[in-house]
Image (cartoon, rainbow, N blue to C red; front, side, top):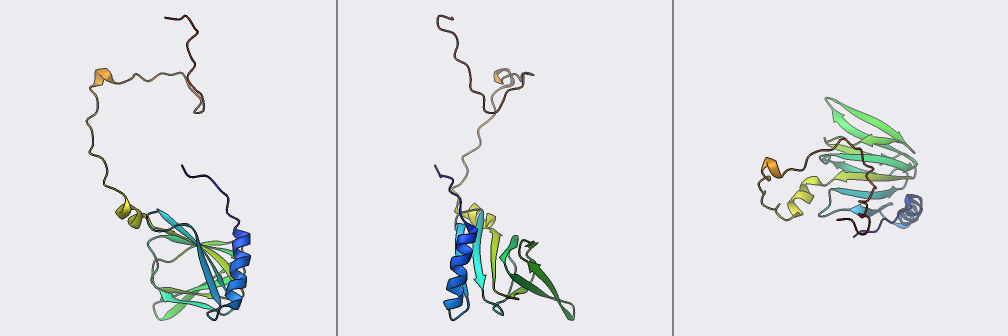
Length: 160
């Protein structure tokens, strides 16, 4: 059973910003959730002003949320270059096409990528399907609404 533990994105953003400033590449990243065998991967990436993530192909589905600073996403469009500026507190659906990213000023982003295909490939094969029970064995539906958190009541002692 997995315990639910909150993750402080602000703390991670501050740590990675310091790492990026000290790094020759002027960037730092940490996966905070998911990855191989999971349906999602969430990575916090810190970039110093002017730092690029070189042009690359977009994943099947991803979002980029700016936690601090401002970034510019660029992508070729016919004979021109389309660009979108994303500010702190904004979220953007990452283009599924060839694109690049540049930190306009010191920035930290949360990149969430769908890993559904990778997760499907890592799962064990599904159990063989079982036939449904005959109709007479099916439980009838009742019209009495029940709270999803309700628990069955024990019959009174001595009841038959």
